[in-house]
Amino acid sequence: MKKIKPTIVVFGCTGTVGTEVMRQLNGRDCIARGVLRNPERPYPVQIGNDSSNITYVSADLNSMEQLKKACAGADALFLLTATSPQQVQHEINIIDAAKQSGIKRIVKLSAPIVQAAAHVEVSQWHSKIDDYLIQNMEEFCCLRPHSFMQNWERNTFTIQYFGKIYGALGNVGRNYIDCRDVATVAVNYLLATEEVKLRSVILAGPEAITNAEMAEKLSRITDRKIEYVDITPGELFSQLTKKAKLPKWLANHIVELDNLAIKVPEPETDTVTNLILRKPYIMEEYLQEHRHLFKRKPLWKLLF
Image (cartoon, rainbow, N blue to C red):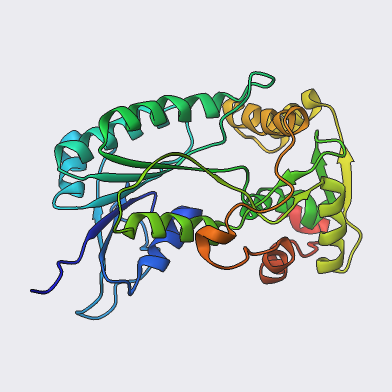
């Protein structure tokens, strides 16, 4: 008797990590069902020929009926929704729908467990979701990266136009991991044949990097001088809200992450080699592949 292929539901399939999860599930011995919040959203991985294992559905994260249809007949689920004040309710809705639909395993992209020395509101959101997940699912896995290399794409504006990085990190390093490595860990757990019950899987990249060191790496890759400007947390918050026009909760989150790294040192070496059976990507690889995002743009273009 032939083995029945498992169906894997991927929430957040158009995001940085979710897109990579879909790419890595493409062609594997499973059905990968990406869930779109907007039915008009472009597919992150195109559906191929008749034998393609990629499918899509759309669902409102506030509609239990639509979420249950998205989960119907599935075996495992990758849980990731956009970071926002609605994230707790959205992800609890998904967990409820998954449980009611008979899904046994959820692999969730979570956040580091924050020690008492620091406060990170978004981590508290994740903690609430994690607790609910563990209490309600037969199998679970909470992946805990510190920061993604791809997060540097948030800084492209000041790098392109002014050759500057602004932050409140001082000379403290932060650990960055490539989203491709995170996706590989997630896919391995989604497709694992053995039982998965893991409250905390720490995902650390190959090194902790200071903002000054990042400026040096970016200077080399862009062939121009990139400078790190260290400012106070209050000044950073003001820049993010007034100049970058970020919502206050997101600006506060970015400031809190710098403060967390200062108070609780991040890993200096990777934790994923044994999980992905290879060495993780290094920052230089990411920057080389995405150097076009950081290249100089003349200031006059801001006028048009």
